Length: 383
Ligand code: DAH
Image 1: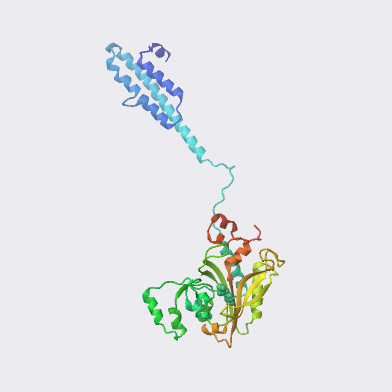
Image 2 (image 1 turned 120 degrees about the vertical axis):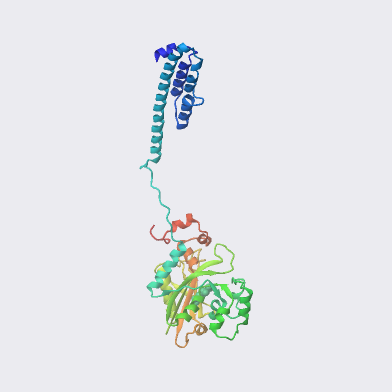
């Protein structure tokens, strides 16, 4: 090498290619791309500096050609070998960085897998169901698209009752042929004929399931009927056009208001805690007689009086009563033999109370950040 360098005058092309190559290697090759550029620059078939040396042979006096060729070959060999080593280096470095990227850092904190969670409404509905199942009730379901017969008529709503008002009820628009068929129905015809012809609507409460179950199963009967209901309400903190209710119905011989009161108090104590009391304020629901608004001990102040219960110590929780004889008759049950009680209330409202949520909309907006926090738990349960 030394003598090559010595013999390499400034115009010695062989020495200058070797010199340029060494400088380039010294400058360093940090990536596969840079390596390929360097390789091309020296060995590239078209423009490579080394092949260029050989194509210059023809300009050399014949006597010197032999020596030039030998030196050029020696330099070529050196460059080819050096490039081979460089290629190995680059490959080794690439492998190392791949390994580092794939390596497991055991000191990193674990990543929690995203899991689903039950919706608070599902949790509350199941709690309610469990309580009644323990008391020997069964659970029934009914259609959300109901007809006027089950939703109102059979429940003893007078024909012009304001609850039927389009203000509250979503009526479904029927195809004209179907409408015509309905109007022709004989208003005096029996229930079997009338029910399927009465106007369709979205049920405004779960009470129509009472009628369906009584007509299908007859008495005695002991069941709850949870489900979704609809009313034309504007959305705000306490209203939603879609919400949830649970209905209870017991029909048997000798059922009285005392059974109703005992059952309601047992249910509320199971759900809201021992010692929860119920009081009945007489009111009118067409399908019960007597009818009552049920109030329970305020769960926030335990009856002492607070802002939530407006100082009264009580909060309204549901409607209840003894099944009206007209309802039993329409459902095909003899009111001389059987009596019954029923009650119904909002599952959403129960959930707001149990969780202490301030706003009904939290239950319907489906925000996972909110919903994920309640996986299987009720307020007050151990975390
Ligand atoms: N269906 C009534 C409503 O939605 C609630 C209700 C009141 C249900 C009295 C009952 C009852 O079973 O007996 O407002």
